[in-house]
Length: 163
Ligand code: PNS
Image (cartoon, rainbow, N blue to C red; front, side, top):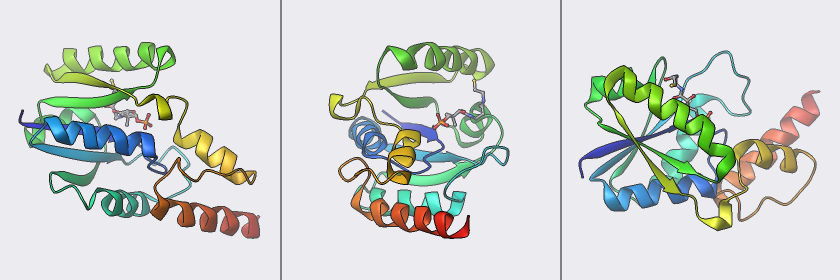
């Protein structure tokens, strides 16, 4: 198969995201992980930091590249000739929203969306929950890549010290 994009906020990347990238990379010749630049949404990490973390975890996989985009995902796909969006589906909670986006994206430019069934190990996992648990001192090791763990702890400590 040619190429696909795995879009998201990745604030920060979790092991659930990584599982989806790696499985997509086993099927597609090239996978672009694309970080949404959304200036209206407050985030723990800057886009540059998120890209850096993603590049670190994607380094062992030669056919995974990391990029960022703003505006509509379908425009990004069209400009780069990417015909397929790949997303993870964790459970029924994801279905409504993901289906809506997939149908809208297809209506806009005929781009296809394909879903990877999330590894049950990570079925409950989200960046938001990771941030919340880590903020209150919970152990998130095994849920985010080891290279992200330290950055997460440091950023939470910085925020705590600053507030
Ligand atoms: O990790 P997230 O925040 O759940 O990712 C959502 C994302 C980035 C995939 C979605 O919000 C998106 O594609 N945004 C780009 C703007 C866009 O194309 N909106 C129309 C969607 S139908």
